[in-house]
Image 1 (cartoon, rainbow, N blue to C red):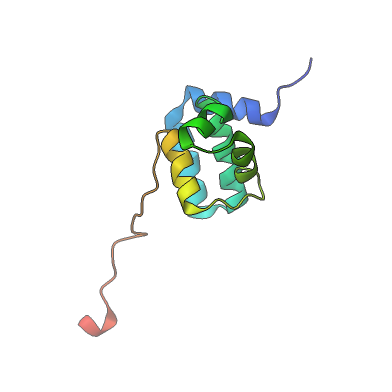
Image 2: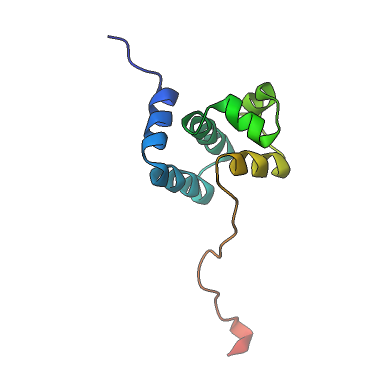
Length: 106
């Protein structure tokens, strides 16, 4: 019996549990590296319509999208925003923790 490739299995998992997919992405944004993020985004693209569909919605060439989401990809912010938007996601900035009171304010 032949096992399915890891990317296919992860895409199916993300398709069946979108909340888990978001947890994975947010965890990578907090503690991971860019290559790991791009791999997961590629798997999510497969999960949510396929790379071709995401490329069309993001107004990117599918070959360019594959390259952008490769482990060595380096997407420009506008490309990343377009890719995320095509998957129904967006970037957001949040504070790391409650702001500390400056030492000189005491």
